[in-house]
Length: 125
Image (cartoon, rainbow, N blue to C red; front, top):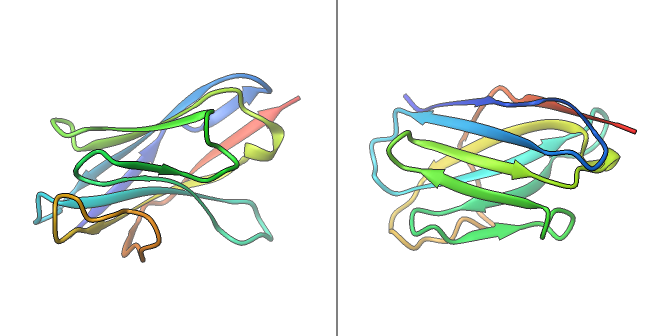
């Protein structure tokens, strides 16, 4: 079965950086879509970024230019590098994934089937 395990969350000051990791296992397909979401208690889950097997990436407007998603296929890990962090970036960050049917299938606007347990990010001012 597919498992997604996030790590790298923690406490950081405003303007600081963190790198989150999402280790994936159990995918039976070489093609996969991986996304990052975040959620603040009492608010709806927010899509942050995603990457497909071709390496095409997408970002929400709120993080574009500050966050970078990347993939290490040898380690089956997807990273979210977060720079210039703001108080509004504080949330629990979740990794999500699904099987893709082609190398270039878009990761945007799709339903994700597998979820990690989340890793909290706190931004202090």
